[in-house]
Amino acid sequence: MGPPGTGKGTQATRLSAAHGLRAISSGDTLRNEIHENTDIGRRARPFVESGGLVPDEVITEVMLAGIDRIPDDAGFLLDGFPRTVPQAEALDAGLTARGRKLDAVLDFQLDDQAIVDRIVSRLVCKKCGRTYNTRFHPPTSPGQCDNCGSELSQRADDSEAVVQTRLKTYREQTAPLIGYYGERGILRGVDASSSADVVEREISAIVRSLGKR
Ligand SMILES: [Zn+2]
Image (tube, rainbow, N blue to C red):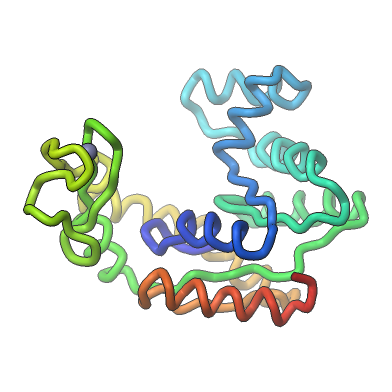
């Protein structure tokens, strides 16, 4: 868990590759269950098609369906879920019923100003989709894609106003999970201000300390 722009998606990809964990993202799992027209996929479909929020109990069942597709002896990594305390409670109940549990929750920590600075300096190539960051990962020639030479631009979602709204939602709805998992003794803080390589080493050490991978 962690606010937008703290590198969770990048680290989920790296961690799953390095430790043989299956990464389960809420967006991909939701699309997959709907595409395969499973029972839970049919329940989730109207919310997705109307552009509304998928209720806590439905998104939790979607994620549990994703977990059920993974062999019992394989480890998994949840990305983008749970986002609220009711989701976390429903997840715990579902995992307990399956004889599984979470071993650790990684809390990506970065102050709000650093998050805003990172996100508003993102650039994307409209043609090939490659992403850049004017501060941390700039293109070789300013405003131009290294890969295909097309013009780079900012995503509409990456404006400062949109980022501030997403941060507010995170602080209100998701930050209470820090207390929830802290009480259960499985919360591990991650300093997300470092480079992706340094963060990856820190997280890998945490995963190894769990003694399972
Ligand atoms: Zn390009």
